[in-house]
Length: 469
Image (cartoon, rainbow, N blue to C red; front, top):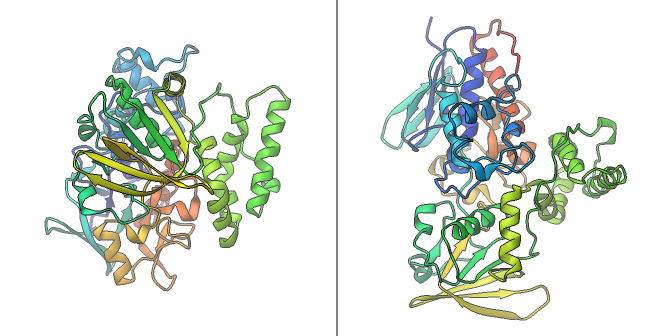
């Protein structure tokens, strides 16, 4: 019998999780190859950082990859003494907010079968996929190095693109030593001087990472963070068990979703609990709620509610919240509600022109600018040769909001005409337009589990070992 094979493009968390789930489910052997240019698999963009100041935004117990092994990460931290070596991660109540690089190392061990038995290994090719097209009984992936891989199924699990400016950057800016287009390149950020004047574009989680890293390295110069609304991520309160919103309460409009969130928050507070529990409950139901909205209502939610959802949904570790609050309190960090409208590089300085709502423009000078505006919002503009080739060939199309690829409920990529391609699947950030809640580890791992179960069933067309996940 011809060996069955799956190629996963992208070896971050999603790619590794699909491979691990497949290994646990498959009754017979299947060849799994992950195409990932990084040295290890499992970390990706989110957990590949080397900066010890970058922490996971939830306790280690909440980083559940395997439903039947909910404390696998915490147990790994204790077994490897990573927890003992990181006392700053303790929050005083028994929870540990680990360093992100530690979770990346855990995922690498998990994919290698060092945490639990996953019935075989995963081949890791350090390369990039540049072309993909369906073929008889499968698909063919072409790598940048020229190698061609034929597989029964291909899974696209690539992560976010680096941030983009809302205007065209001048050549002088792009080559300026003080402009950092990639906020995740922590090695480059070490060149920021301790007394440099820094402007951070954006006030979300990436800004928190950048500012925390600067403070960890003893930065003393003024830091200004800009975003149109000046909203910062909230800190975490105590964690308690939450449940999904009952199905009969699911709203069908963006306004209905807002009203539901407010009603649930008031209920939690009236009963003496934290409003965060209401958001966590909505998070459990977010994919179902999102899927039930029309495209028009989804667009309204993105335009009017997303910034407020993000700062309540994507909360930060208490250690980071305290550090940011302290920096603001002593005037080291200033957060301003203003949108950047221009950047000009002149000799050693960069001039940032901003405008508050309904106000005049203002220009300030600085020594360094870090772009934390978030991933490129339009998937068709991403600097990814594979995606551009898929769009050009018609084997894929963007979702209606251009957040990622258009896929159906079974994760099948839809071609230009809307027809699903059975041999090409997508999971993770590329599917946010379809499922919305694809960022948190428990939710994303559940998507990966369901996709893995489908793939194993299709590939073997036979009995699948019952999953206990």
